[in-house]
Length: 491
Image 1 (cartoon, rainbow, N blue to C red):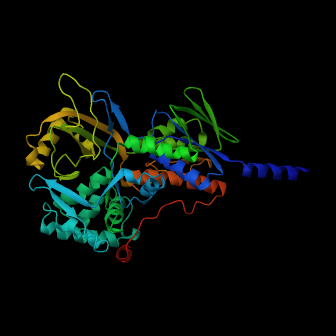
Image 2 (cartoon, rainbow, N blue to C red; image 1 turned 135 degrees about the horizontal axis):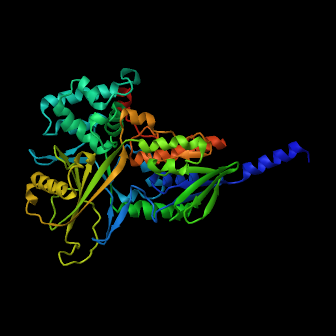
């Protein structure tokens, strides 16, 4: 056999060999990437996931509280009906039953009793959302007209209408929005969904929230609320499903070093284990990826990711001796408290102590405060005291409720801020090394730092890998629905 024949044979053998893919990190982005890889290219790849911790889920997970002897979610997570790729992942992995779908929102403020606002699903989108604007008692009639005009302009906006670098608040002020409208309407939705108020997010991210989340179709604003602990949904059920598909999961494998060689990569863990890979999908957080890749010249630019601006989220876990009301969630306006959830799953009996015993007769609620860095001057006890006072103002019927136990949990780097400058700094899945790909809700997904953004980022990493190998991934994404009226109105 001549030299050309041998080269052709080697190339043919390489093409037929299954590619070894290592996914670094078992957060939602890494799990989504693994699922997409094995589903689309299962006969062409071997997929292994390395996770430094002993469980999967990353920031969408839970921890075991030693004082309470129970599993507690870091923070209450919800999805929306517009999260097409996240919901597609849940359906494909038989996890849809772990979520309750809520088509109405319950609002409350100090001055008005709580009010349930239902969308009119008998109307086409976006007309079905009229009740949200016109039934909010804390928004004046004058401000409602202002908001309606701005919503129309948001739908009709195109890229040429607004220069880069404009914050949402500056755009809203330019459209004649009053400070009251911004504080009582725009900031309420922006902070809940994007983790920051309109003065620190881009106009593009605000438009994305309202167009995709409220305008596009009648199910877009539905809340998908977990009916089980996140550690069960992602850390157990999703992992079990991926393993059944052939994904290898290695926990307690903390990656210490990534070495590049001509054939691919060699990953070394702190325990001394070594793994060879043709492709690497890094799904580690933005503040860690630079440390892992600092010895690889072509990837040293990733160190800049550690400087991405972040926003914190605080979850205040409360157990009362009686229910606070007949509702599953409450959106609070004009208070430090933003959301109050009562998870549908019941906490199991917990530890006995001299002071209390938590059991099934106690009622568990979680208060969520996004952008909680604005309250960092307060201690946990001070913030909890404010929240308890607000809860009793929002729901007078529960003023006599006795707090049995509590826990305050803050993630100081919960989400990437959707500031105009930050949006420009988020890197794509493709890197300077063709076989090294990025995943994570902090990468450039076109979405804010959410569960949907995490799933899209995992699929973006698979798309980058597929392009490198010459494979077709054109049907790798779920496309959001859009109603026929919305198609005519939204530019």
